[in-house]
Image (cartoon, rainbow, N blue to C red; front, side, top):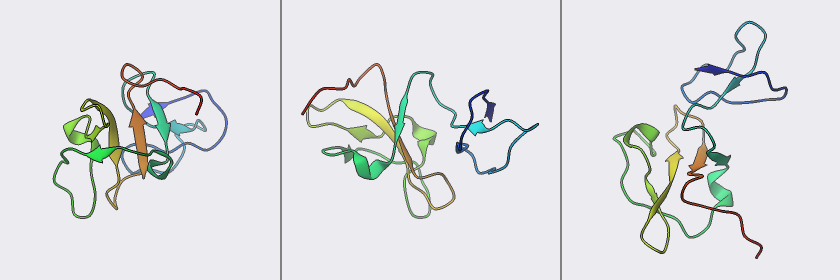
Length: 97
């Protein structure tokens, strides 16, 4: 669990939904990753997923493959975890449509 000095809602990577010492919790993961709603990503395919009851867990590392064949993101979609997609800043970049 990581504590941040940023205002606004944030979601921890591992379950606890409360603040620690009045500071918001933020998702853990490699610094610089871009966290988005998985429904906002297009063209990614689940390559492998750690064992979970109903979705993917981030425990196995990057698990989303783009059309070029590179692993580029980590999906967290199991029912007991936050529903989020961590895009690797070292593998993706923003482009205009």
